[in-house]
Image 1 (cartoon, rainbow, N blue to C red):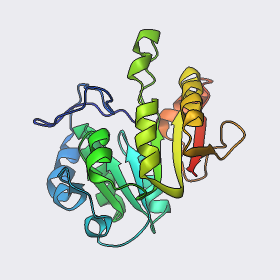
Image 2 (image 1 turned 90 degrees about the vertical axis):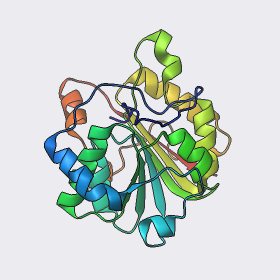
Image 3 (image 1 turned 90 degrees about the horizontal axis):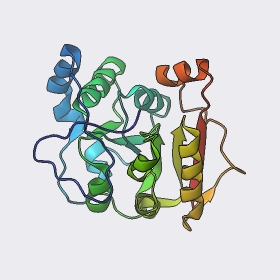
Image 4 (image 1 turned 180 degrees about the vertical axis):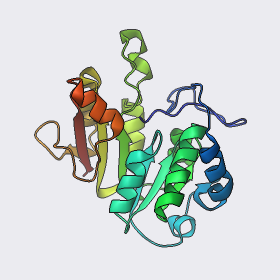
Length: 233
């Protein structure tokens, strides 16, 4: 679900870590209409300057970062379930941004803001240390082939960045349906000295994370799903 794909013109990206992969995608009429009508209110510009959450959301509230929301199904569900929190969502895939904007309009969600930009630069330039109440990374691209494993999102440099942006006691929640990637995630997160596992191993699925159509389809085919929930020490 969570690897972004098409890069907007003029957007630079780091060569070391990328939170997206370029893929073809077509924006529907409904998504395009939602983008035109709602983007001015809900899509934030990438400025390279520290983001003030109170100004961006119009209120002071705990803020959760989501990296790569796909088509926004889980994002909208969680935002509706937790109206007292802000959700800052990074995705470069334009059809996905349009799809989430469409859900925002249909469900009258006011606690979501979108940055259509690579999350690494957002972390480095726009998020202050200790500013986040949580981070969600759901079903990032598993890069199944061994020679492609190095492209996986959950690697020590990114996790180190994320850990410093979490407030003490804040959480990092990852989920994947690819067991080898789940094992790698566990190794990387467990090795980060600023993080502590909230479970003995993999965590039970938190109640706020919905079963998406994608996940339900996998479960019917006998695929497992692994959740990892770590907290900032």
